[in-house]
Amino acid sequence: MPSTANINDRFFSGIYQEVWKKMIPEGLTEAEVDFIMEEGGLAEGSRVLDLMCGYGRHSLELARRGARVTAIDNLPEYIEEIDQRKGSLPLEAICASAAGMQLEGRYQGAICMGNSFNFFSAAEAAPILQNIAGHLDTGGTLIINTWTLAEISLRYFKEKDWFYVGDMKYLVDSQYHFDPSRIEADHIIVTPEGRSETIRGVDYIFSISEMSALLRQAGLEMKAIYATPRKKPFRFGDTRAYIVSVKTLS
Image (tube, rainbow, N blue to C red; front, side, top):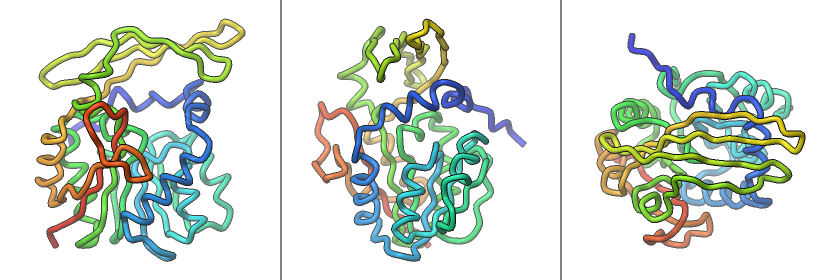
């Protein structure tokens, strides 16, 4: 069996778990779940797959609205946090890698948020999409949230950048590589006490055309691309994208 290891497997471990939470603007999760429910035609009782769910901000909110959620992430710490928070909600949290997950049953909708899909090259992403599509109902929806489409990255790429996340200083040292197109970066987080942590990550870059081809190979048709969960149509120069695709093959 081929290895399912990925350089990004431990990206969200350690101090970054808290940094990532601080990066999420207030109200974004609720707005995104509004979008997911509407675009996916989801209702109470709908089965939803949340792939690379992180600490479960979408999974928990979907379950609060009555969806039956399967949340999958490779970090045990995140799965434990979801289990501690879910109470009696209809939510099952599973610790597994996206490349090695064993899915069961059928889903009306699936999501992959927070740029997680771009942790994989085209060769790695293709079987993941095929696995998801194989467990989606015909007409079921897959929503991918990304900010490393080529149409975004080619405009906003910086070799060096820094900013504050709360009281933590966040520095990024990046290199843009080709064949496959990707950004390899060292993310350096410095706490107010002077403690630092460096995390190495890779984001693979797909154009909209390449994304459409990957989805089509898995039996998914790209339906729309939005720049915001309020459905602003995506245009060159926007900073993130919400890609909506529909399963077309039974």
